[in-house]
Image (cartoon, rainbow, N blue to C red; front, side, top):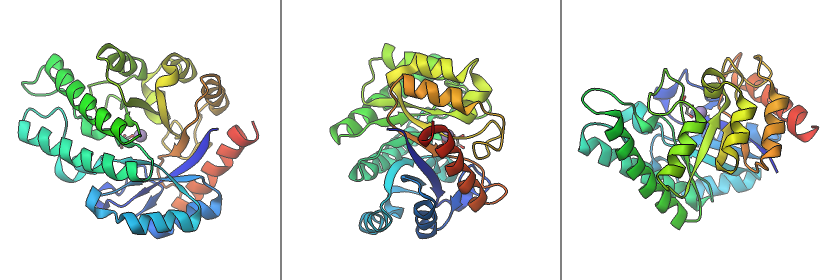
Length: 273
Ligand code: LER
Ligand code: MN
């Protein structure tokens, strides 16, 4: 079954980013539940910023699942990256993500590596960056696998990274390097910029799709841009995708309107489709 999720950021430095609800976990969960979402995706400042007992109680009270946890605060707040030329920064990035992998696993959810992948720059060659990245993904994927969850790797558009921009090349990289425990996060906003065809790419990546960021072409709620949502949902059905469509979108015109439009689009495309 394809399920709905919506993002909640708890990182003040990420204001202006593609998160529907900001700064208030209780409010975000309450609104997500009231609007009928199945789950929330949380973007926390760090693993120790979330209290497991409180989060469990909050999710139970609202009958919500945790769809995923983002790790991008490591980049946004501390400029950590898994492909930094500095081994100390790579080590801190690894620890930061490992803490969030462990935390997410308590809720049977995956952690996401997006911005923390870094980029190829300075004296570091592409070959070297990809080698470091493969080793980090393999170790973190094994850690997640031992806890019974997967790790999500998200290719980003060319303005955010130059490591991998397209889902097909990222999927091939994981297969070639025999990296297990890692699935792809396909963000429809990035795919709209980078892919020739989003449905064809989803079909080609197939079982390696582990999570979807559900955003329109302008990164607003689906339906507020010109995304061809029906063809995308059909492709997801064809590959027997069983995960979330998680709204990582700009809170425009405001958070409530973006959330309402998202659940309306989800019902039109998935529930009624
Ligand atoms: C993270 O999920 C993402 O999509 C990046 O573009 C960070 O904004
Ligand atoms: Mn994303």
